[in-house]
Length: 218
Image 1 (cartoon, rainbow, N blue to C red):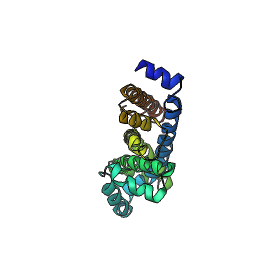
Image 2 (tube, rainbow, N blue to C red):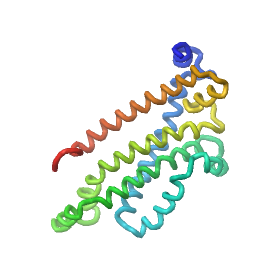
Image 3 (cartoon, rainbow, N blue to C red):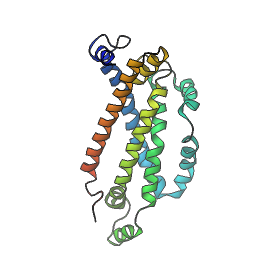
Image 4 (cartoon, rainbow, N blue to C red):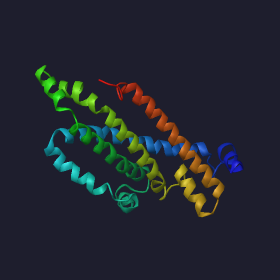
């Protein structure tokens, strides 16, 4: 396994690409999909938590596709978006959208009514109510949803790189497993696990930076 790691990382690589190139390709797909999830799921989830009419339209769709295994609809994504990067990113996006959406809806629903009442008494309404009360109060739950979402995206990576892919650490693990190259499989698994730990650590640092009051008495 050590020889495979040296070869993949610093030698000829796996199928002509180094381990770092495979990791870079996979991380690019993950981060693009995750960014799209955050930019869409957070506002939609907060709106659905605030207004029941919007939730009645969006929530059933999310809860319908959420329990479906990714491979069940990956073929449809390939038919609609082709075999390139778009279908892979869309698969990762759908895997990561639901956890953030559910966390945002749940966070708004669990807001303390007393806080909302006091804010209204003090003159907050509309945008100010959202900016100074709703959004800060839901940030801890949003970060939990984001961390869960990133985990779902990472576990779906292998499925996303199954079809028409020639790079990516998930593809590397799959291709090596077909030819019983267990040393390369272990290298890919360790690479994914270690990068997952690094991403988790980065999220904890961001959480401490943006939500310093979490876990502390008010």
